[in-house]
Length: 190
Image 1: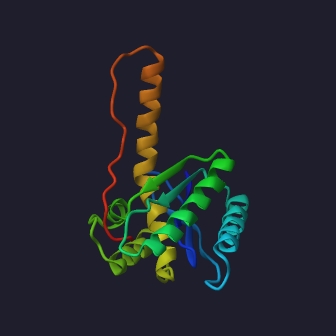
Image 2: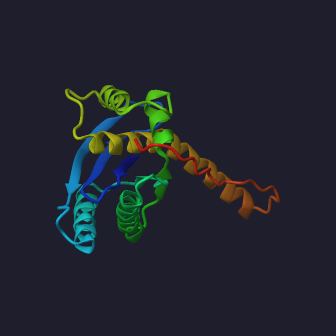
């Protein structure tokens, strides 16, 4: 499975693409940052993010997209820009019919380090090791995007199979039901 991870932001939107499957070695496809100028109007910045992500999706052809779930922070202005950038990434994926998953920072941290409260240095170190990179990805937005992609490869693929099985069970007339909602845990970003 090829997963594009997106760490949304208006100035720096991290994008990391990974090939892999649960239990198998991961392979880095690309890591980059889509940048916009803080001097530009927000609408133009969102257009720039869209164009950057569109070009990467056209080139790299991901099977799924994992976006960091936006949560409430102290700075409302920052969270609004982050949410807008996340929405653009989801829109671009939806246009292509790609599945989109939202992972919390804690989920991504736990997936790559085993600790949902790991700091940025720990996440970057483990991403570097898991992908067998010669140097840590920079800036942190790039490492965070890769952590989201890895999280989805390891967790999202299994969840997609569970959801597909539930859908098949529902179609065959089995009356059992389950709750597939995820919790919205707050906390600091990746």
